Image (tube, rainbow, N blue to C red; front, side):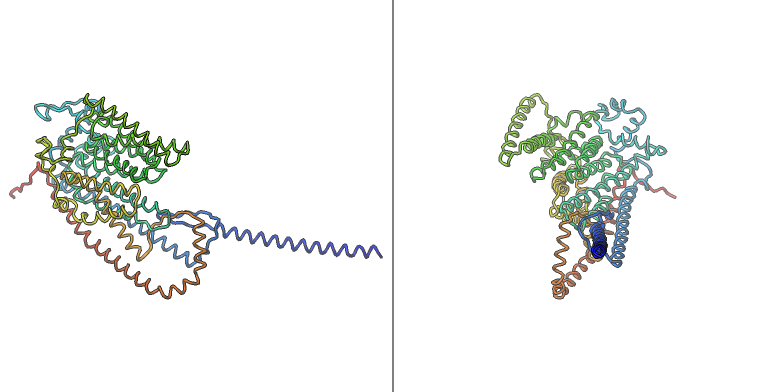
Length: 605
């Protein structure tokens, strides 16, 4: 009896224990399900739209639930955005086609004929290179040029034009005649230069907005398309790239704008410096094509020095400039007889060399500062001492080399840019009309309405300060100064004004479109803490927003209406003035398409 009594509570205890274990298991299962569901909500993929593409990333912060209606609206906006991007792509292709088509006026009227005097010599040199090869071309002495003295063509010509034509003949357009290729090359490279100018405008805007490091609307694509469209037909570009005008400048603008774009792209951030290799290669091509490479070299060198004065020096900028200078200069010295050791001797190219040496000293100071942990005062003392020592060594070298005639004098054309053209002392330079100073009417003749729009783009570059936008500002100042000294150098102002005008029009067009529908691309910076903080603030302020919406709703609607009216007026202005600008450019193209060595005659029927 006693055993049965004792066994009874033991059985009840076992039953109670089993019930407690079952409850505990159920609770653990429920907890695990809650945790799994919570982790599932916490690891919700957030979709970020960047430049029209979508990328999914897993974050550890809670995200709000997207309803089916919101998802459908997001999908509709995404499709509409892609349609808008395809529209911009169509405009870009149309601009490049117009750049090619508008330059064929002389070919349609006169046929595949080389016109003007210099292009005929360039074509004759191209034929000699094609039939005799590079080695004989370098040692070719032409008895018919500069008669009766003759000319050593191989050592006095920039052979990039001839080499490009022969390359196209041998490897790409094998069925076309050499004459036809030379006639069409200005039109082809006119489109290439237009594309690079669009890329310069794109980089100036994109790098400026990327620097803000927050979610913003970017109008870089619109600016690039607008700049390419202006450069495609602006008379300042047409003046040296009409079909049949087989001259150095027709290719030089493509090489120059390509060098500028790769330089701006290589200094976008610290990881972009390897693009300096492309900058050096494109600069080498520029040296091979045209003697105006001195302007390109000094332009990049001035910008590199300007970045130091602005306090924007970095190791990435140092590496990019060093690659550009070393690669481009060494290739030019080693392969081009006309250049030789000029980059290390000519006074016209001493500035970029000084900047290069200065960059080496600055980087040495930065390395020592990082390794030894110097404070600001010690770092400045190191810089001053190092630069004083470098200056003394440079002064000693100049003192030893100058009497021997190591440094070459400034050329007559460069002197003409610094003093009045009548004081150069060279009658050949002084007598040419293209070497006269430019006046107001000539700027409007070759730039038309771009003269009004481009300054607005320069002001926008000053507002959004970045490495690329500072280059745009400096390029505008320098090119305007030199074009005011010599009319023919308006060709150097054309790319800058086109890019600046494209920035102004692109930003205006993008803002106007944004007032009606959000089709803009966005720059997203992944910052989970800021996002969660903003969501908490929104949750706490949800009660007060309702009251503020009642009082501020009318003001918001009025502001929105005013913005839409302004956007509509911007659309109308672009729609009204664009055909006028295109018509003026077509007229200038027709006027430039009449070769001076050919005449039209009417035959009697």
